[in-house]
Image 1 (cartoon, rainbow, N blue to C red):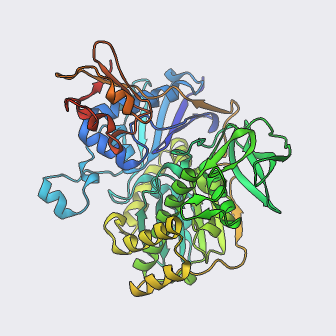
Image 2: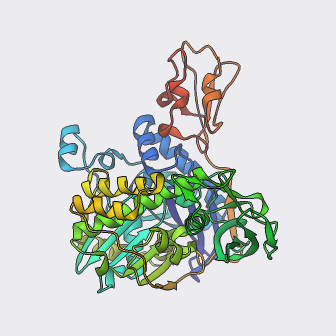
Image 3: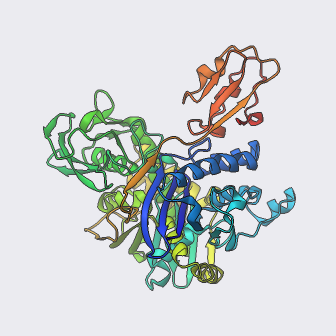
Length: 539
């Protein structure tokens, strides 16, 4: 009788899981969620929720979703012997029920001033039931190490799986997601950072946005003032959709006609390239009558969507700039780029370089897929890899740059906002850099050599294919003395995540809520009695 293993990638935008036959090491099935169950759309929202509302509530919400995911893997969970997980330090801490204050405040002085203990985030093996997983007693949980407490297992995964660590030339690797982890290797030195790029890269905060799944427009191919939509099929592979003109009229129907239901972050990036090439982006707006571009099957991209993507592009380019400046090298000395994550897989690398997601001097670009889930699966198949990864983590001499407080990042990101939102010229951009003592941004020249190492971000789905779990998240509830049941908090919720019942009980659906990035419900309470942080988990 076969025994099974489960590999998990806990990402800021959602959870991904494989079921693996441990006798054959064959991947049997794959399940993913469409979003994260915690309120908020980025890692800082989740971190703040953890601190303000409580790590135990955050842990329970996440584990509720993880257990729902593993129950969809179509295996007998009573025969699970191993679980391996990967993710950034905040997600792995929430998963294990650990405190996160040491991740919220940077630097030894801040930790001392607030009396915060820095927790050990080395590799660990522990009983899987201890964290609340619905697996048998005796099943082991394998957690890979962080390099430092700011540089997590997901960053280690993209370095390890890409070949970045063995590269002799200067090279850069970036996981193109909400948190945008990145690392620059110069000789034996590694410089790391993470840019809060926002959820647009994962297709969130976009009107028709969605994760990479069947029916998503993942790219646009340009030809003579027209674009061909590429739509993901049931195997999550890009196939030809309709050929559209700039007015949104269908010129020619493709094999995926009628099957588009939304657009990925990579599709939005392609739309950015489209409006830039067509000179349709003017001071933060699409220069059309309705401020939109229309794609097939009624899917559209509006000015807000493009603006959100441009902020992500700006944050990533500022991050790349900052690492190069700290390493003391020029763009011309950095020619090799590794692109990880779903967005890094499906995006057209040439368009990505054209609009700033990839340094303009990159000559060799490698698209390597979801390295976090891949490394968790490697650990599942070979638990001894955990010790090797700890040794690698111990040996990496990493210089971590805190972008949030870095002067170079601040300067470049302000330039990026002015470029995308105000129409600042690149000449002015570089003139301002010169005044600040920062190198100029070179022009994009020539065609890069692009290597697609995988066809999709999760290369092997298993015989069952991909299962997408929509029913995730839970509810927070509370009643507050002095509440008159006026319903203003309900009316003011931009995501319709909050309801007020006749008995004045307030209920919030966690997966729909913007959380601590919003708080509009609390701010608009006329009696000032509603306290979001005092909501409790519905039982």
